[in-house]
Image: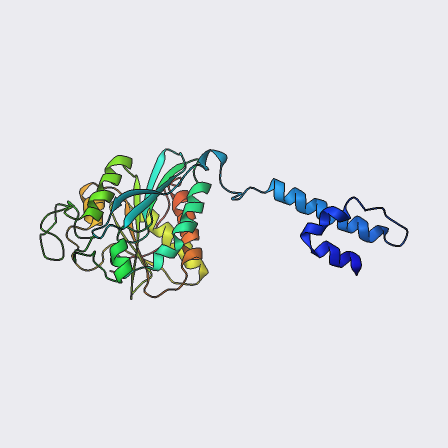
Length: 285
Ligand SMILES: [Zn+2]
């Protein structure tokens, strides 16, 4: 009991090791304690902080790409060095925060696919809306209606002109800089979970929905939201430029979407390598 008590206190372990002179009665016990101590030291030395992270990506860090109307930072991180490029936006409507909790996990997954992909993640492009719990930014503008799409319509909640808000201006500049080959944006809605897409993104949408459904939620793919979205990011990036973009609609109020998002993101990264991925989900509208 005396030996057990001393071993349980870490700062006493150094005292135990030099005294380790096995006797006939205590030899096995001391040998076990010694091996345990040795194993702990080896584990501490051998395990890197993030085992899945390739060494050449360890310098990735969050940076500020712009500021909101009220001066909150809009932060982004770029992970990996592969030739394919993904932009992931954790939130654009401030009252749809479900996806924000999955962002850090998404960074981990991006590291794991860093050999093939360069992934840039914007944690939250509407920090004022998130702080206020509102869909719009602090000026009452819907940041998903303020893009320079051909179908942009000026309006009180859409802005007088495209990119008149600092949040859309910052992320637009980011997109022009990194030129992503796919964009993924997290939202939520009561009729979720579903994946809406624009541009040539059907295979990605199918892959996301199929993988995300693994944990129980019945995800579906909706090529159309069923209502007009003038000036949306999907209209500008997906329709006007014919590039793939996924609008991920988590079920409103879902508490933890981390695991299903992790599965789905892995599937998207893999789907790009399977150009002929078959459609497994039928559109409901
Ligand atoms: Zn939304």
